[in-house]
Length: 301
View 1 (cartoon, rainbow, N blue to C red):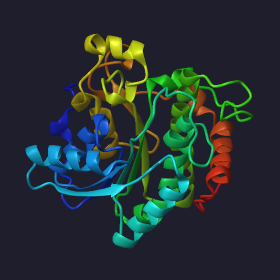
View 2: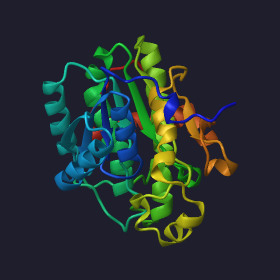
View 3: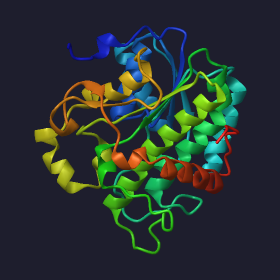
View 4: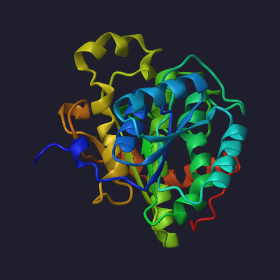
């Protein structure tokens, strides 16, 4: 079977897309590819300067790209709510939401609301954002949500008694794995609830394998091996782009590279972790996420 590449992305003309963390790495490549295929892309970025630089970068290769920049701080749930309110006021629908932004193995840090930073940004903020924008996704004829997970989820474990690593002591790699496992559990539970409600919104997930980006700036050993093993961001973005645009994708489909250990290659459907297939854990994470964020989707359990 031929490799899935940028050329396989269907025409996106007329579609409205929102990509979080679109100022660099696979987020920038995802936004740029969607714009090149005709989508109207909103770049949701924490920094105005970096967001504007990203738009200039995209327009250098796609002069007629339809782009917007909106500031979004995923480490603050109040800012997430404010962003969503502004976005709903300015748009009648949203066709594609790519939950791409993330943090990886930082020093012990907290979000504005006191959550462990990786859980707060990588999962809770995107849970809140998706819920707040769900009415716009429902208004689309073919709404889709993509969550970007990681092979790092394999070392993750949901410790519901200590999600913020306060009792066990902070461990950056384990906290990262927990947040990325949460992404997969979220996709499965959201997909199940949407199906139960009769919604047409599709939810998929992807991981970029080993891709060299500034996400790894706090992890010296990954940076050391990036020149040997790391893919360029343009190729690392392909699983996200397939999850976002493949017309044959189904609910809770997961895409990753087709090479050895899913580290490199071209996107194909791959299985989620066995731990991500735990229905009880997915439902419990959903309930906890609603409680912690205050965002309730109104979907049947």
